[in-house]
Image (cartoon, rainbow, N blue to C red; front, side, top):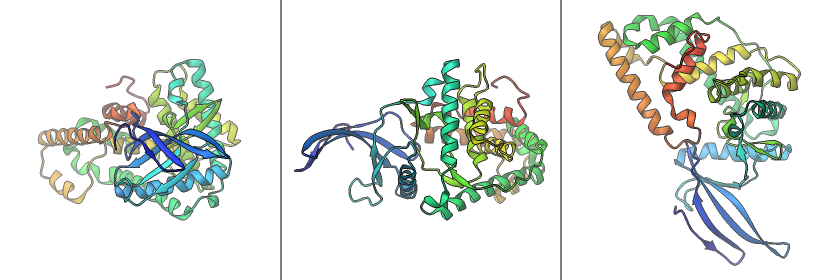
Length: 357
């Protein structure tokens, strides 16, 4: 794909294709102009071309296309998705074409104390409206429900491993992982209550929300599933704190307060999902000890000193790999793996450590 390209037929011409700086982990983003005839007049409109990096990412693209269409039918503010091509004959990769919305994302408004509260209110109200969508309107809702349950099962298995088996080889873990293990073991064991499942974005954060004429337009639906709405709220709670940890107002807590106000009820499982999301961040950033069978066997052979050395090496290798994967990600905070580790650890320790170590 070149940075500048033109294509034309008798009815449509495509020109000005250029790659956008902001990229996702699984896709590359391009903008282009399309000129076409409509009702006897020639019109020019700008579009987004989203090219998925791998063929197996086509499933996410297909899911996102279906969800965008379902939400559009419910008159919710999302981009219009025009087509999805999962075969690779055209561009060599799966791709989707959608409208381009010229607007700044919500993270641009979080640096001002007054504007940040206004934007967080809008984000909360928008998420409440999303959670009101009947999952039956979404294609393959059973699959989306299974994806959510699988994610939760993985986190529960991680917590079980930490509580029951990790002490067998604490010497294998570097100091940060030991603190993480100790923090998780001290968490109150909460059994989540059954609630009505809703459509979840699963990555609802300021960088995925475009602010246009006072409305929040929600993009990037590739991770969506169906489950407990408290998961979405818990995720956004942490992302707002990550973006503005030193803000005068705790934007995460303010978001929760606004969401529960607009939703008209308390989220009974919120603390459970706040903890689970923090554990998920810790797992993603490399704080979770290895719990594969082979790693456990090797760990028993290591002394405490040698375990520190090997553990720190493996942690550094994990961080290096994550940094390579996330190097082009459009959200800058996700490229700072060490900061995410520190934040997740400090939250699970209930902010015992106030400094960004």
